Image 1 (cartoon, one colour):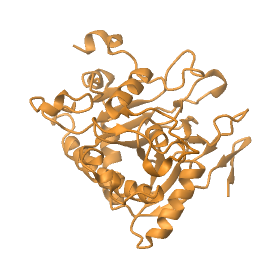
Image 2 (cartoon, rainbow, N blue to C red; image 1 turned 90 degrees about the vertical axis):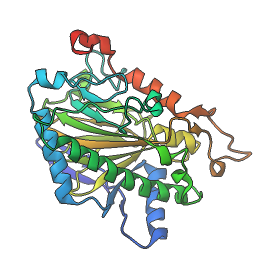
Image 3 (cartoon, helix red, strand yellow; image 1 turned 180 degrees about the vertical axis):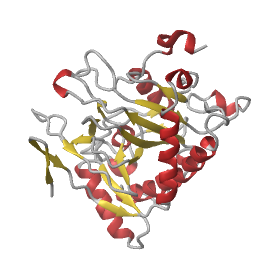
Image 4 (cartoon, rainbow, N blue to C red; image 1 turned 135 degrees about the vertical axis):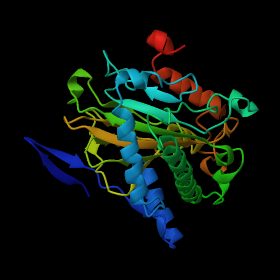
Length: 337
């Protein structure tokens, strides 16, 4: 069921996604809805996930406060080699085929798992101390983001349990210590400044891409912008909008889960197309531990369907994907010492 929405002179298509109620006691129904979504397009909504709308509103408010700082202040918080901190306009380049001249017209802010610099775990590529604005500049900002990070991790684990059941695995398969027990969990605040996208000339809020990891939770404001393409090989590609739903997370599967499931579950192309309105969103990326070996799941292979990918360490896979899509830090010269 798709809905046509008139947007000025042209009608746009909005995709109708399955909605999973995380408070439901009917696990069979929840797993059935999720499995259908994962086989179809890899996108769905989750509601009643335990994070209050009041707190979500506070996180969005704090995000706006940070992005409203002068650029000179934000550049003092520039992302480091561990991908923590501020990412300026055009820093990320997701679609090299179509974004010929420039990167994404968005700015962002990465917040990962907080690990002290003197902790041996900080030697891992995606662990370490975060980059935080000074409390006198943004009072209460760090506390809000750390609390959201904690709560979103619990939502992601709840979704992963349903995914495990949908793949005929034990419900706690992804809860193991080597998986989400020591997860690489990254919160990313995003701000699209209101530039009108021009797909024919490679101008996007965010270029077409599929996410790198296991799953992504996305909260958005009420501005339409996210589009998905269910069949990336179609000529021409058909893009459908995903409507914002107040209080819900939009969830999508990442390439790592597609790889893990031997392509049974889909990681779908998506992009952000700007319509001239400012837009804010909050993404939460969840991946297994650094040392998790991602290899074909036992329930996803057979004599007639052997593994399509060789095993790979999570940290090796993610490091390469980040390197392929972000500007070299030397680009920013004096701002990154």
